[in-house]
Length: 169
Image (cartoon, rainbow, N blue to C red; front, side, top):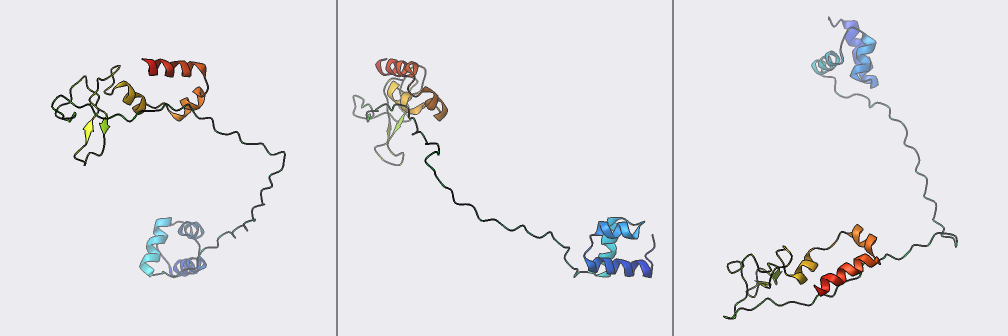
């Protein structure tokens, strides 16, 4: 395709008006959008009018919320019963030491007690329970049901029986 003086003049005029390369290509006919972009670049046409943008819709101010006596009341959140956990000290062996990474075995509770950076850091060391790596008390502490299960089970007699069995077990 040859760029005649007339077509170049039309290109310059349409570019200055802010038309897109696709729109200019359609008006000129016989050229692609990429050909228009290439010619604009070679001609050094830079500053162009910005295309018109739709006017922004005015933002309506939010209506104030009116709480009437007929508004539904929120029910207080139902929480699952909490189980009081005693503060468990790590088991002390006959030599006075506590369980460490080096002394733990399969049948010992591996629940960490204290800050790992502290010299008094230890593991629980009691007997593990029910295939867990923790004793019964630490297993209850470590394995909490999800919030959805807590909400479903709140106040359910079956859940209460299960918790009593775990506490007695």
